[in-house]
Image 1 (tube, rainbow, N blue to C red):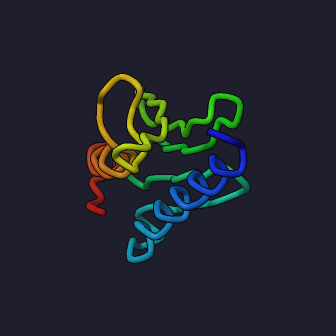
Image 2 (image 1 turned 180 degrees about the horizontal axis):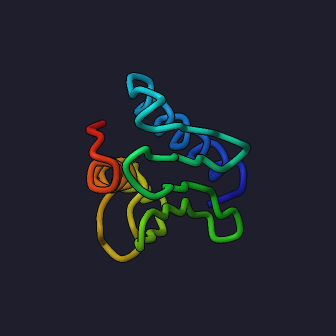
Image 3 (image 1 turned 90 degrees about the horizontal axis):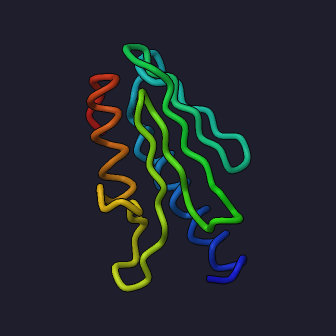
Length: 104
């Protein structure tokens, strides 16, 4: 995948993640986006961080004691974990529910 395509797909994915939190009370989850990094401070849990990894053409997600590396799958047109543990938004939703008790 070339750099321009990666940047476009990653930007769309990060924007979609931010959209998930539109209706979430900021007292429950404080979401901050700076450049290619999204930090989610959960009132009832640890921080969740989502960021791009340009050299690897991936999006990384970390929260609690867990971490995932997502690569874009052209055939499925979505970001999938390299270890087969799910799709970006699905994993994020499950993680935020588990750590912060928030349903997205």
